[in-house]
Length: 197
Image (cartoon, rainbow, N blue to C red; front, side, top):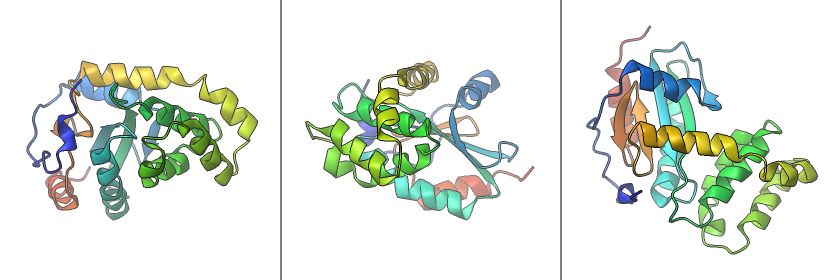
């Protein structure tokens, strides 16, 4: 795996690859975490690594895109923890464990918004446990689930490999691949080109 998308601006708004409908269906069918109406014409799938600095920079952009297009876009988050990041898998496990208590998105946001706090820490799991407490989660259940939630992360990673993800973040907009950080303006331009259903 390469980490080429760490260079901001790499996502220039030009699709690199168009997936066939089978692969697009896999991206959507195997997804566990989604926001919006799946019947909308615009489907955005993000493969991200919680420890990736470029993914951290993309996070507020995605939030703004979804807020501006809440009735038009369906967003799916997929894990793609890069092996070079020592705490990325633990971060994904923390988000999944929080998801077992219906707080995936809240933990997702906390992890990205506090990336600098935990990314190089030798005590990342303790930091994630403090986030779980902040969210009012049952800490005992969170700790228990932390080690049980590896399968969805591994499935996301396998699906990412299958569709050619080799850096993070990688976005698929209606099956078109956009590696790297895509600006809000680029996202909006792409979305506006897609006719409503």
